[in-house]
Image 1 (cartoon, rainbow, N blue to C red):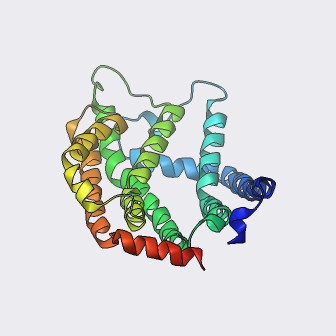
Image 2 (cartoon, rainbow, N blue to C red):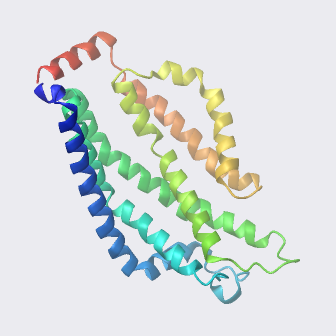
Image 3 (tube, rainbow, N blue to C red):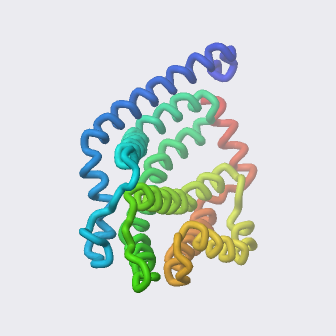
Length: 254
């Protein structure tokens, strides 16, 4: 494979080309998202609607630039997410010369699945996790203080939850890929199951902005289920070390 012996200058030129296309895609998608920032913010506010504890059913902003800043932030994040297929495609094009034939096929197959897994995780956080969490936060202490919600605080909380739930749902896809290339095994994951359960509840306490064990369990439970799914997938993806070596050798000859 001659691409592997390219001079460093050509690799840097290729990297600059891929970064340029990625940045252009982000800028275009961000501009489009900013034109629809009101609809995006309304969508993010949807889980909090229907709670009578929210005065006027609308969040507030106390800084004159707060709403503009949060609209720009949401537009940028929406632009990055919308351009993610293009970014992933550029990453594939840049890394393709250094991959074997088998690794390329795994990468092409798992990239769409990883994107779908992230969407499922964000949807889980949006529909299942966030409504009870916001309900707890609004009712906790509502007899003493009136919960006026700042738009910046609310959106940052929502984005954080959606991001981390999306990342967590990527776990089975990542571990399956690692098992296919011989980095992890189902036996190793099975032995670490107890630690995974403890880590799941720690992450539940960190990600969930409440002290309610029920809401924390809503985060920990899918992590544990996804870990068990990962063990099952690594059993399917497991390959004999000699077979992996043969596959990589055959891929280098492609």
